[in-house]
Image (cartoon, rainbow, N blue to C red; front, side, top):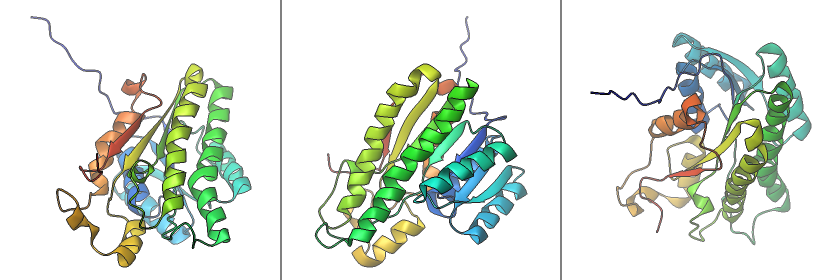
Length: 257
């Protein structure tokens, strides 16, 4: 009898990964997942103290990580940070574009300066960062994986605030599809994860305003960041080389369909 073994390796040994928004929530979890799979991880965020904590945690688990302070609303800082990581760790072959902020306001009430901030952090910054990674991969003729973090809010908005957040996350989904087409010939795969309501520092802040939303959901619960581990590894793994331009929704049945 012929035996069959699935090509499902998630070994990321030799890969250099950058995770933005790594100081809490999903980014905190994603950084550990990639390090545990063998990647050397550059963790980026605005809070040095928290970055030092996640580096120490990863190293205690036998992984390799370095901290980089980065505000993704600062476009010149993005290029500088990528160049520094490249010099110190090597060419980034995996990017998890996770940094984001909510607006938590009705469209008619959100201040103009907050509009700029949300657009820069949630959409412009991820685009510029993906571009900087792709430029270096293309020049070095190396394949790569970019995983953008969208949101189920890109597809389902209840009208109770955070309209601009929904718009930016829809932009991330479309950006994923467009860049996947443009960079496919360079073997750079661009995909996205669109989470529903998962426990995180950002969501906790929103829940203070909205109350316990979990009781509205069919399973009466919020998701845990660790429940996205397998999806992240799937999209970063060498064995998923044909998967590009895909947005994977992970919402525990929360979204209205």
